[in-house]
Image 1 (cartoon, rainbow over the protein chains, first blue to last red):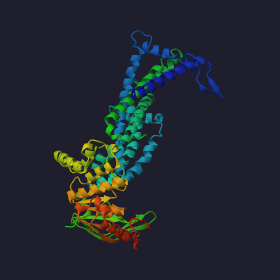
Image 2 (cartoon, rainbow over the protein chains, first blue to last red):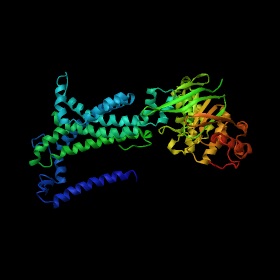
Image 3 (cartoon, rainbow over the protein chains, first blue to last red):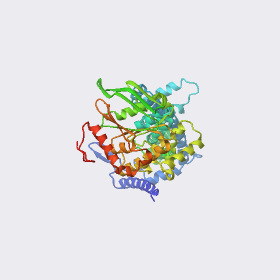
Length: 285
Length: 267
């Protein structure tokens, strides 16, 4: 019963959201709700707010009206799989880099004061500004491909929560624990493996969740900025232009993006299950 | 060879804004093998600092600390002492058995040997059935027993204890004291024991070192002639000699003879 409860709440939440959409579409003004010249709620026309059923049915129809065109849902699944792959690679790179930075900062105080401001500053650079730099730099390397630029940008977003969260986790053991290890004559490396890393797991898990979300968002946005074809990011832009005549279509890659996010979050949750014994005290981030 | 020799030790801490605090001044103390010595005194008398110097968790500013004829640093690296703090300091992700095993694991003791030793120690502290529990599932007293078992893991000749029962309630505390007497009888280890409690110090010790603050100095050393570990049991807590020694320690602490009425604080 207790295990089923979150699932029930999740399903109820989705149904409520759908119901809200349809109710507003039914009763809302056709011109939308405008306050002081600013549209705060959208117009309720079929173009601006297609019925949920329209979106659903559109998934079953072919992508293009030409013969031989695959059904839309297949195209979306393929694109989502592509983007998920890029996000996964970015996540792994982000986690490795973030962990290495955290260990370095834990080991050397000077590294922390030298690196931490740059790490925080790095996240204030917009992806739009970064994309041409990365692809421009990459194009000078042999065998460089556009998807690698996307990976670079997505991992650039993913490493940040890991480095900050892991650093907090590595520094979480109490003084008494550290002195105990010292009294055993344990060196830095042993203390890292036996004390600091296990103690950092609760902090790390929430950082890994954030990194997964960042990797997915980073991958989708960077696909658009770099102009990489094959993923849901590019698909969103392409299908948006179809909205005037085919209002259900642009929603398909959006659902694809949501699916990627759910899969990524689920994967991290599974990882958390395998590290359960280190999570005796879960830390919210 | 003596378990601990402290010679003319001084410790000065540098605090913020270039100030200094003399935590210890001219401390000399010898702890014989198998001897139980308590350090007692008001807050700030440097009793914990002295223990930390013996454990090589801090270094003396002047003087020297020798443990079993070696420098404190060498004794730490050779694992000549076991240590227990006020907080049990168990690792939450390790079971009771794994916590006790930790020092043996770090020093690459073979697994079968480790397992046998852990079983022995669990038996000693009476926690055999709790081997696979996690620390959060234990009471404070049980956690402290695990910490003591862990400190005994490598059969050290010296046990350093910094108010190990300080966070426990009075009843658990007395039971733990009885257990410590028994453990000491079985291991024969020397003990340096920091405490705030006069009856605790008298009940456990062969000698009680009374310290005074600012600067931390040894004011007096009271010998406790109440017999060996065989007679340190519940009856001793009611014995006349016990009360007399408690009064003697209290007098040494306050620096003046106190009222003859026993068991009454009259500060």
